Amino acid sequence: MSRRVVIVTAVHAPSARFLPDAYKSLCEQWLPDGWEWHWAVQEDGRTDEVRPYVPDDERVTFRQGRPGGPGVARTIALAHADGDYVRILDADDQLTPGALARDLAALEADRTIGWATSRALDLLPDGSTVGFASDPDEGPVERGAVLAFWKTNGFLAQVHPATLFVRRDLLLALGGWMALPASEDTGLLLALNAVSRGWFSAEVGLLYRKWEGQATGQASHADPVERTARMAVVEARARALADTHWHYPPA
Image (cartoon, rainbow, N blue to C red; front, side, top):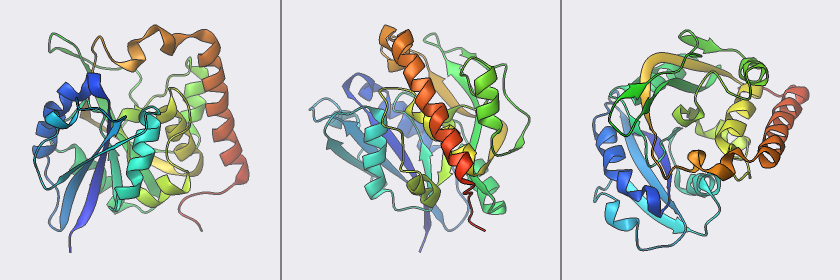
């Protein structure tokens, strides 16, 4: 019986048109013998606008639910994520060839690594790409390193939460994504790093699409009052987890 990597994608109507590109990037992945991927697409809502973009492939499942934001959609999708690992893929993003295999190899080689991230490039509307200046060197990301960098660099992490590849049991132990209107993926990343070592791959693993309709580009995302509150609770959760001295894997 094959072991499985489940790719979890939250989608809403405006981003549904990008699903074929995300699917194409999945079809270009390769995994070692005995492994397979499955794509769990979860609509954040119940409309008739997303399903036409979902590919007809037995490796793909599509479900709908009450709207609550991408974190809620991803977390409810975990009910059907029956693999050893979960990889995040936003509906408007694309994996690069080999991304799944590289992350899988890092975690399979070292049980003390709970999660992996990789280099990401912004994919601009004209098709060009732009990198990030804060990328760390390839290798382990020690516990607490993400919070320390994030706190001293204007609430920007040195690794991108949209590239997250994580052990399913660890993800469930932390309760999935935070119940926030935004930054729920950053909150999860900091929580993971509070209890577990991670891994960073210096090879590009994700093309992060920039477009006019994305949630992080809207004015509400930068509202200073809400943003301050989001950052406060994200930090408080990470510090509370660290203070428990619980770590993954358990001793």
